[in-house]
Length: 584
Image 1 (cartoon, one colour):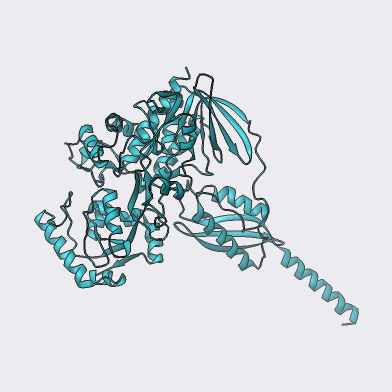
Image 2: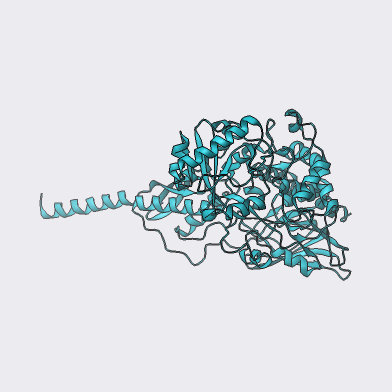
């Protein structure tokens, strides 16, 4: 072969290699989300991302929706994984972005650095809009208000400051207390009444709750639950109810999946079907009042642009509390300080309370702030898997001893845990209890994540469970032997367990470490039984309604478990109906 032929062959070979290297290539990468691995298949063409397919994930479908749509589109558009995630879906965002980075590394592609702007261009949405009812906050109370107002013939819009809907209602266990429910009847619990329910609620809040508000909540709990089942389409378990701490009866309905996802997905679908616009990334900043003092709209901001939403009938505040605002929490209750993480959604920061106060609304009970006793020591979120506590799981400290009744009020248990060595505790149960609560199967992603993190362990023997967390096996065995005796005799001589202890003599055993986290702010706007916001003189502010955790009159010093969903659904409907009526 002559010199020219060798050169030609070399050039052709280089061209061929160039063409091969320039061909699109698809590689997979994996990151860890909130509920396990997120796997993606990323297609690259000349070093640019052209396509991302999510091939595996167990994330919350509602919370992570924009991670797999909006965030994914931004990654493709900017060719970068160094961009801001979706607010309110931090762990899902990080897992997705880490998966993209892993795929790029495998393909040998260097992605772009953090771009200056990852936001899409502003939409052409009108900056001045008019409705009969404006609902602020797309959680459970907001959806209930919007759907109810729409069903009454009102033209409704639902505004949400976060990129995703749901708020605390989405990430909650979402159990809902109802007296006289169809599930209680299925289980032969025939002696529960709204009056008994109200008595428990008032007592649980040290009689600081408004008796008339509590009465409205408990009386309307059953028809509201039936509305959720028959109109909204929420599915509840028909063979089990929880008995939360402070309740004298098992009365908490349990949604399928044991989280608020069942509610929010059904509400979202119904709102779409009814033609209710749900506008996310829209932060309400100021209520608008006319010359007569009536609330007639709201000023809001989105992506740096100002918007006005006029409301003929009224504005419903359903923005939640302020549990995710550590500074505000400490301001009103200095004892809940930097030691505490929070269970709350990141949007639960309380600005709407001050917005309503500027419009004349009265704030009450602001220092009453609840911690949830059984939370992840790492992230602060509720350990839903440990709901086995409501079916017989016990609480022990590092010394292997019980120290409080497991069905006590949340504030009592939280304080008791903080008084233990290390300010933490363990929840322990066995398969016999697990067959009742079924939490390991239902919350399988939690089980995997907590086990990987080392805060949960499954053991065939009690000795193995104790040794994993460096608890004295003999001390834990002595505690369990005593529990087993109390279970057999039907009387807990140590802490008077109100539902009766369960036998723990055989494994397998489940044990998880837990700490208290800031959970619910009982204080907020003062309302009447019509969900109207009251001013400093106790008079209704025309056109202003509120429902859910943004209000401060229902729970007193302490909210009993399962009462939040009852509260937000009952008063969400009342607020929506009231605002719709004033539009006519």
